[in-house]
Image 1 (cartoon, rainbow, N blue to C red):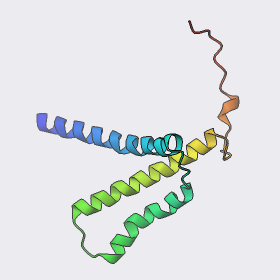
Image 2: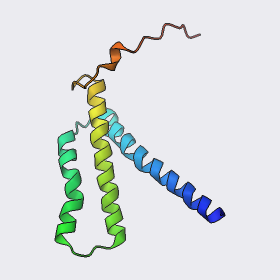
Image 3: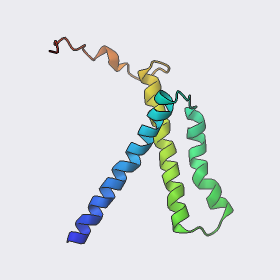
Amino acid sequence: MLKSLLSLGLYLILSIGIVIVPVKLTHYFCKVKKIKINRWVIGCVGPLILIIPKLLFAQMPDFIWKILIFIFITSVIMFFELSRMMIENKEMKGLIDYSKYIKPNKRKVK
């Protein structure tokens, strides 16, 4: 029972980390380092990270395959995070402009 709870906890922590790390990495590149990343390059290269090694090598160690899947997941999350940042900065038009639905905060902060 304890072993299954520990493995579940480890799984949850790793899953959250796999999502948080690319988001923070994207913000670091774009806002701190001011590096302009082309989201379409990331979006097109992402699937190739898995396809090309699978075509070239018949057998790959599981450890290498898991690293490639992590890199693929990172590129996919970075693609969508860059898209979200571009919509927020009005560099790209989204489907719905949510800014007209958000009311400014009129409370005074002491």
